[in-house]
Image (tube, rainbow, N blue to C red; front, side):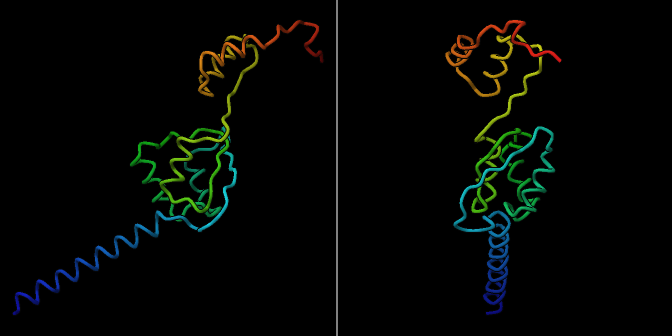
Length: 154
């Protein structure tokens, strides 16, 4: 009888421990709010991942910074969030929000330094915006040659 009692106590402790772990997991990774519409957020060119995660916490998009960093690391998305615009919601859980920020930009930024030829600009646009070869060719066909008379003087 004592052996059965020990087994029951150990089983109860294990069940409680599992319940606590499941509750903690659900709380840390779940959406902060339910039924919230999508909003557009912008990740600037100079924003670091650490700064972004802090802002997400401050603005109520995530419950826990550590949990969000865990998701990014687990999925291999650490350092993959690029500058641009994203459609996100406070109703997204940490996994879905991380996926959106790492893989689904609503808008992308492409920096074009002055002095590049149109072909070089087209290359940057193709790489930055995932253009097909046809899109790049169409861009080059529509770009007109700029003459010196079209350049403003100071």
